[in-house]
Length: 370
Image 1 (cartoon, rainbow, N blue to C red):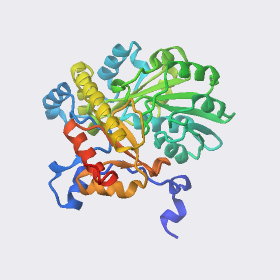
Image 2 (image 1 turned 120 degrees about the horizontal axis):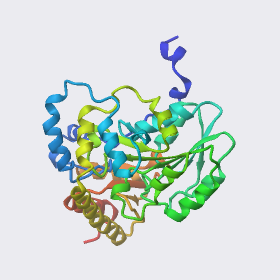
Image 3 (image 1 turned 90 degrees about the vertical axis):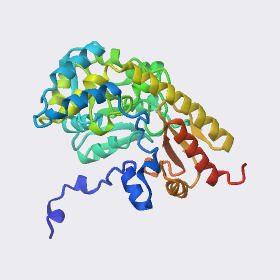
Image 4 (image 1 turned 135 degrees about the vertical axis):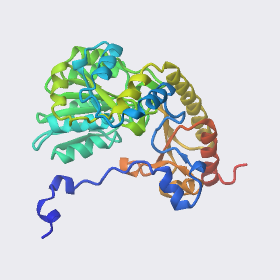
């Protein structure tokens, strides 16, 4: 009997690992082409790159990488607290907001408990729950592939420890607004943790609910944000959560020492002041949204109207479409892993990349169109 057969955690053995968007380097090797000729439109990254203020901070701090980071991230937590009108003890940092989801697993999930998620929401919620032998209650999405908050509240059972609201939702780009959130919270018991996962909040092209007021006033709510999307710090892995102090102090118990590296902290400190970069990003995403949605309509393709920096497009048999695009040096995400086998998700690029994507998509979806 092997070590895996004898000792591997059965909950881990049952998991299919998360498959991120393929990296440019891998595709370039596979196709034998110049990496510079590839458009990666698969991971919802910021096509404008990294916040210039963050880059300046990184250049200045590179010589200090021999030192450990501030384990408590005092200055960044202080700045985030001032920015959002809370106190430092209400802020927890993670190596991406994804790590904070792991903290939630460690602190709240176990055998004999359940979590509630929406169908077609960020798949990591289900993966983490399964790692902790926690039952997943998956609630069908609305007709528009968004969260049905009323049905999610009604799905809560006596053993439900947490409920996850991805807003805007990845991969559908849908948004739940203030009225729906308010009605939802009236139905959620105080002993159920409500996680508002808002990775795209700063660049959302819709009216975000005021979850900040919610986490300030309720003892069971947590708001997650990230520097990956709006600020272009995906490669440094830094995100944060805010909530009532007792809840944050509990999550801190699961955090490993030095989980957020020194450069990530410095870049995030500077990026918080880069309002100009955020505005330029929002302008590009608004232009991209209009162009891609209009192009899909001209091609006769169904799509889910988005408020984020990506678009979910129904193409029929997604794998050959994905492969066709890959052959053109365009990386997108097929959505079978999210229960959407007929769809691809395309991240917004700069306008040249957006036009290149539509041109390649037209070749396979509307080859006779001039």
